[in-house]
Length: 176
Image 1 (cartoon, helix red, strand yellow):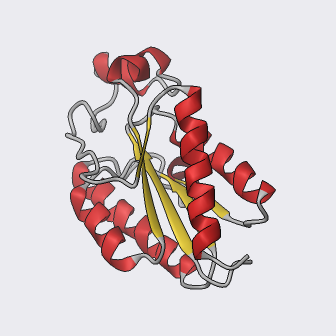
Image 2 (spheres, rainbow, N blue to C red):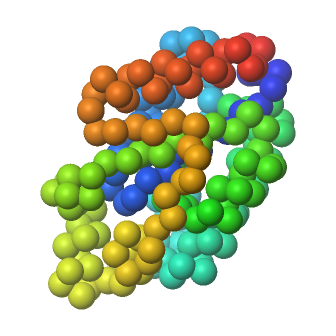
Image 3 (spheres, rainbow, N blue to C red):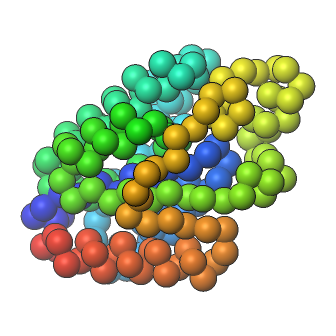
């Protein structure tokens, strides 16, 4: 375990590849002897029984702050925390920057056309057929990070470069 905690907050639109990026980062951190805790927003919703709620803008904001406070709790105990969540609100991003030690903000910035094409969870097609509402990027405006530490595009080379930068940054800031 590290002697100083850190939080890598991975954000982007639904279906942009946040969890995939987190899993790749997790492996590379472990390859560099940096143990970490991974939190996936969808998985936390499932664990807490919130799969049919907390989708309005206000509820998403509340849940985002809960995620932030959980990350703080864990990083204050010297854990390296990776979290993949939409939480695209400036208030949350600002709170994180002010309150989380060794905070790294990663914005997965994939073209919306590519996200629509992927539509792995069928969120966008369900929205278009009026089966669901409260989809960030459609009827809930998303607030892209103003000054993220890292921006990941959809290409493989960019992703690997960002992962290397994060690993090197964490190695320089924490004692493993």
